[in-house]
Amino acid sequence: MDYDAGDLKIEGNNYFVQYTKNFKAYDKITDNDKNKCFDFAYDMSYGNIGKQRNSRSGGSVHRTKGQIFINTFQGKMAEFALYRFLENKNIQVNAPDLRKHKLGIWDSFDFECQGKIISVKSTKKYGNLLLLETKDWNNNGEYIPNLGNGNSKYDYTVLVRFNPDGEMIMRDSGLLLQREDDIQSEIKRLLIETICNKDWEYDFPGFIYYSELVKMVRQKRIIPKGAKLNKNAKMDAENYYFQVGKMHSIIEMYTRDIKQETDDRFRFKRKCPMCGETLTLRQGYSWFWGCEGYKRGCRYNEQLEKYKANKI
Ligand SMILES: [Zn+2]
Image: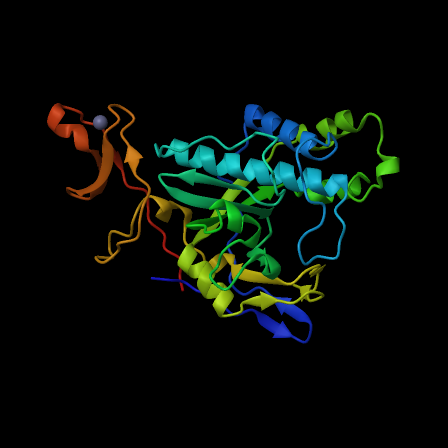
């Protein structure tokens, strides 16, 4: 069943989120992954390697090196977070792309898994909206900047939330909106101290399917430029929104609601960690994951995670 973005409460120019999920850390980024993301983000911003666009489409704000850095850092960490999540569930997936010559659009983070394209979006821990700039999407729910390269339709759009808030740290350190002339010669050391040496925890508030993204576009689920969000942030561009409390739970990427008989969505295939055969859901006294290799003697099985569908 397709979910929809949910109505916001609107009072004049103020927009209020109605469907939320509390942040509950799933894990933190490992030092190894974090360092890779840091080097990538540094090279793509201060290092001037790779091609980055420095203004958001539709946004009037020129992006500084500080903004490009922190957005790239967080976006890449979000990819690693999801990659590790899938890997941990024995779902075969390629590692995130760290090539810097790739004609990168700094806010586009996507990868392929079992023939499906996953777009990963990140936000702060108290973020309760998936936001997509309206100028970037056509009426078929295709990502316009990628129209020529075959990666414009995302089977899944996944949201990852981070604690702490990278933009706020950058702002408080005077690094976010810094002019190029003012950038310190020891900027890399400063960023390592203020950003890279922190623990970055994350959660997965949910995801939406392609059909739901199309629905969001066609239903014009829009927050206009200049609107105030929860009496706080001012929108710097017009965005489509999907409320976090209306998104699919992350485990629906590979497991299904066993109570729902007609649940034929595509799920990622899991592999047995012992023999490499496919894991399938089976029913004994209760439901469990069993290995297809049982006829050849593999006895691997595991308990089914508690399935929590969103309340709609
Ligand atoms: Zn097995």
